[in-house]
Length: 115
Image (cartoon, rainbow, N blue to C red; front, side, top):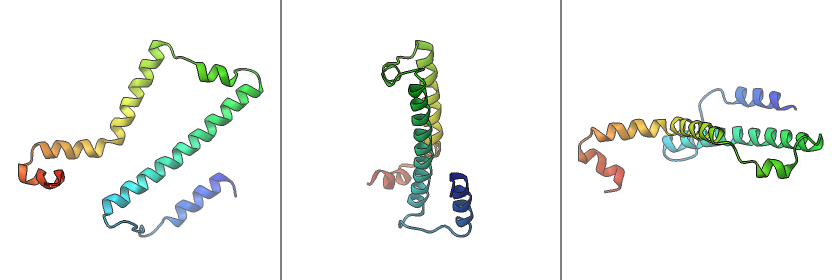
């Protein structure tokens, strides 16, 4: 089975009610998001590894050149900006909740602090 077929089948199997593994539904949702993100990261890693190996095999770039690359300041700044946007997107739900807590009375915040 190729990867595309595996994805198609996993989506087809995911129809219907989602299983719950943890006692808190929010924890289940978070776990599902982390696992989905992990799958995407694994795919990116595999593709990056392929590109690096092809570059080395064709003697375009060596692994040493790739490992020792230091980005120009404008490239580093662009990467930093991308990372900040990425982290904001990941934590967007938490930032909404924190904003709501700022406007809440202390008695609503205390349980979240473990008080």
